[in-house]
Length: 57
Image 1 (cartoon, rainbow, N blue to C red):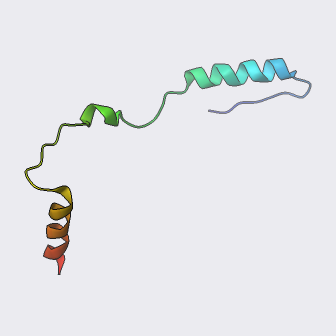
Image 2: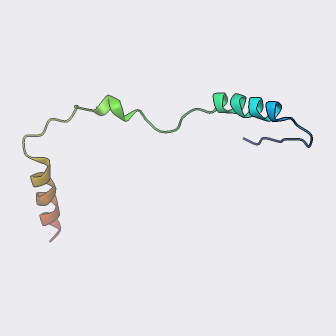
Image 3: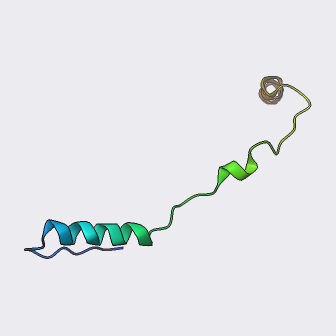
């Protein structure tokens, strides 16, 4: 999105233009909170990580 501010614009006009532009922008990314508590592990997470690292050696 391109915003053009003309010479002589007042602070009030610039501020209102920026606020309108901020309303139009959608946040990027995903909602990670919907995944919280969904994985149930039988082992300790640190032990799983160590086992995976040992496979590489």
